[in-house]
Length: 124
View 1 (cartoon, rainbow, N blue to C red):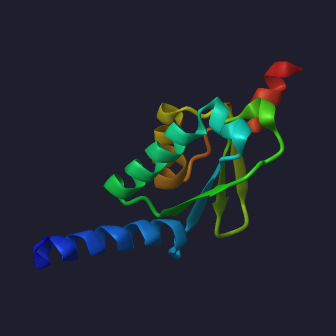
View 2 (view 1 turned 90 degrees about the vertical axis):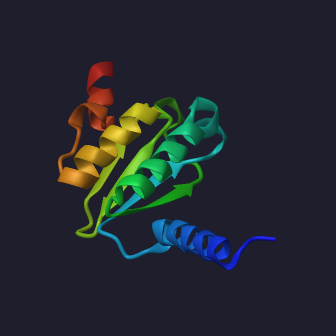
């Protein structure tokens, strides 16, 4: 059986995870986790976002959604700000996910070269 102190630590960790998913933060980070996203590598991206946010206390909640509708650009991460701004990052890998947190969430700078607009410009 766990000690009372161990149970308190487990409770604090669980509350922190819930807050990361549902708390009142300045940003909401959404990862497309439909089968297309998962097949393209969204699970490691989601895991990295959760780990980095917990470790560095970024001011955001991390959630997941189903199909975003742009399978060719998966894994997709969308960042929503409190002011209604919305940025879609595409072809995200775990390292890009960490950079998105550092730059967009941490410093308020959108990483244009990771966005859907940049990907579409390359195709044209």
